[in-house]
Every structure is written in structure tokens, then in C-alpha cells.
Image (cartoon, rainbow, N blue to C red; front, side, top):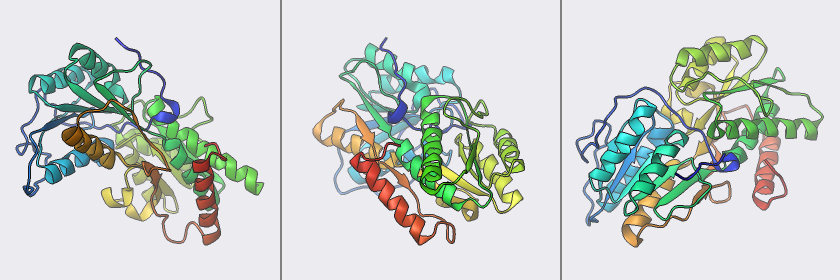
Length: 351
């Protein structure tokens, strides 16, 4: 099979949690996770399918964002959709195979952990089309499209904002599993803090990641681990924490909320909209997966499949940061962040 490469700047976080497994695709309209939509005026004879990682489509993060893009395509284009949720690595290959057997025109897989299973399916089924979020390959496929995101760009901005906003001079970050789609966030965050320190002559400390080694919970589902890891940072003085661990991050948010005067930086989506911790979210590092999924489905349905890779950046709106919490980032700092963003886009600043 073709080999995955470490995706570095072309990767993002894989958010996971436990969900019910489906070894076969759910029919459009009958899925328990499918949102009700109005029937569009015109429909396309096309079926787009999606396989989650073990987070399921209600994880309030990575899988859910991709699923919402699929559902929007269903609503706007009148296509059929089918989905299959996974609870473990062992479900990936059977779930993808079920989509192929069901005759899906396009099967989208969600996350770095599905990389091998998706490549094997694409190799074994050259007449089927696939897309995968967060993976690029050493060799190219004619029937497999990569959707990746340079989240280090947005994380750099969040790191700068965190360093500027910290009252204690200590911030922290941790991941679920040490894979490129996680550490890219942590790399960008660390670089943003270091950039602030150099620019301001400051010495804001980053707990949990030094660019090579750091804190990882070992999974993407155990919120208790997230809570204890965050509490460890808080005990060392951290007042802003970036958890890159999907729903494990909700445990970190619980610790921050209980401690008081501690902020959380969300990942993937705007956490002020999708969690109960809106009042402690400094900002969120946005990976706009929904629009990316929507676009690949729409283009494939209307114009035919293309294996040309998509890379989400600050420049094309594929990544970004959400609005900062009130009374945290002052106008001068916000202006600096806008200048840094422009520098990343024009290449004068390397995240």
C-alpha cells in the first residue's frame, strides 16, 4: 500500500470520543445523528458517504464538524447521504468497505487514524472515489483526495494572544495522542508564545510541550484524564490552557471552570457555541472542516471528482481563530495579531 507521511503543517487535530459502532452505512434520513432538512427544489443523483473515527458524529468537535458539512450538502444539493460510526480502529476498514459495497459515489473518512484503511480501500477499489480529512500521502492516488489544514497558523495567533493575556506568565497545552494532527496545534501555540516573548522581552512559560516532548493523555475519550492534566497545569500556575484532545478537552474545561480565573482555548470549532463552557473560552482555533467537506461533495457531484489536494490556510479561510473573550485581548494586542496574521499569509512570519 502507499505510505502515509508525517503531515506536519498539512495536518490538524483528530477529535475522538466513544460512540455507537455501525458496521454498515445508515440510510439517509434514518440515521439517529442526521439532522432534518428541507427537500431542495432540485436533486442530484449522487450519494456521499462518511465514516467517522471513534469519536462519532456527535462529538461536538472534529467528526461533528465534518458531518455538518455533509448534511448541508444534502440539504442544498438534494443528494443522498449515508454514514457509519466507528468505536475502535478495528471498525475502520469494515465501515469503509460497507460504503463501497453500498455504491457510494464518494466516501469521506474523518481523521489521521483512518489513513491506512482509507489508502487500502482506495487501492482495492480504483473505480470508487474517496476523500480523507487530515492525511496526505507520500504517493498520490487518482481516486483519493486529501483535505488538510495548516492549523499551526491559527494556533500561532492563539499562542500570541495567550501570552499577552496571561496574568501569571504561565500557559499550558496537552494532547490526546502524539500524532502530527495533534502536535501541529501545539507547535503553533508554542511558537506564538515564543514570538510574543521575543517581541515584548517577556518570559511567558509554556507547560506541556517543548517542541519534541510533552503531555499526552493517551486517548481522545477520557475526560477525567483531561481534567487531571489541566489541574496539574493549574497547580503550576497556568491560567490559559490549550487541550488538543477532542472531548478530553472538556475535562480540562471542567477543571478550569472549577478553579476560576483560568481560560481554555478550544480547537476545531467555536467552543462558545458547542460546549457548556462558553464563559471560560478565550478563543478557539478554528479548522473549518464543514465548508471543506461541503465543497468537495458539491464539486464532485456537479463537476466530477478531482483528487487535487485541499489545504486550509489563514489565506483561504480554512483555518482561523474565533472572537476573543471580552476584556481579555486589548485593542493594541488585537491589532498586533492582525498584523501577524497578515505576515503569516505573505510569508514574512513563519508559524
